[in-house]
Image (cartoon, rainbow over all chains, first blue to last red):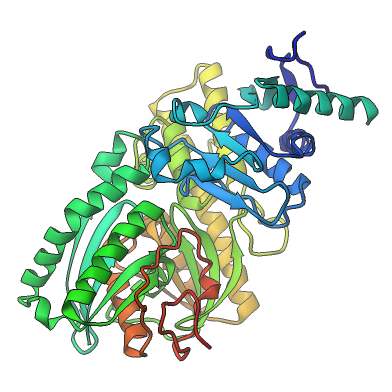
Length: 168
Length: 354
């Protein structure tokens, strides 16, 4: 696994190949370890690109023991048994970003929690901005992933991941 | 006891009147599927706003069909969870306000217990104990049922629910919402054997399900067909059939294992996916071979409805269980946490007082 990103840390890194679901989960676990104090992470990618798989790896990496179910029907799945607390959103079925207000969106994005947001484009305008963004795509039968930092906190997350890769 | 049941946990608004002596008196349903189809799925706040518009007219319709008025209602039951919080709040507020005005008991019941007990509304209801397979858009679970409120979770999906997998496969096959019936209809034109999909988690022991890998397999198959120029209506139908067969056989294999493990001979299949004809055929054949019995709700009571809530509520209200002043809306609520029928519950089913 390698973590590439642009010169200033804010540009998209290179695409890297994820051979299978295990590789996607391992990448998620590394991201989780780097997000020690909470963050907002946007996850882009089509249906079946591996967004929930990445979240599963992240959650198990942080010590969550149980299942990681797709939040498609519930909009958000909370994981309050681990630190930082993780809230896994799937906004695929959101019709209007204003609906986020009805969900009490502000309570989730307190800064101390790690918020993973699938389909963030559906919440544009009302969704708090991301510290880092991850994009997944399907190429043939495998997946590709790239990431970028959007804030100073995001930059340290990406740097921590790079360090972890160097020392592993 | 005559119980008015109100269901508003997700897509549908359902109201029904159930009489403990005379059975189901009337029921009415307003589906929001047409509205949601534009968005490719359930839209939480659109759903809750529309429940507001539909509840009162549905309630009036149910009473007038039964040729009764509100004074004949002895108690009220509503869906307290699991579901979408905004949608649940609408039904809960309506039920509590009406109960307060009529001075009758009210109880927030569990949506999946409603589904589980829906086959009890049929002429030949199952006897306890039995194994229940609950399959819908939000759930895929196997439960051992020893009586009302005596549930043991045997296994559930570790990722996507079976109904959700149908919805996502439908999207990949360029079909509309809800996905289950459309994939099933397309599968009827399919040629068996052209594509063979995996049967997830059947090669190892256990009763857990996983449908996320099947979604990936469908996507890869669709992309491969598009890449090699074989994407056509026939290919879509062949993929739909292979997908449906994989889901159905996976569910059937797990049911067989659950019956073996528990020693039960009765199987109850409930939830939206239980209306799937292919699933019913395979399960009936399987149960026939072992001299077992399989029970379903009638198709209109497989999906969300008020009748199952009125029935489940009636059993518990008759046992003296009821809400206090608190309106319950519980988005996540494991069914195994429900109290048995003989528990003292005076402030809802969420926290029994003994």
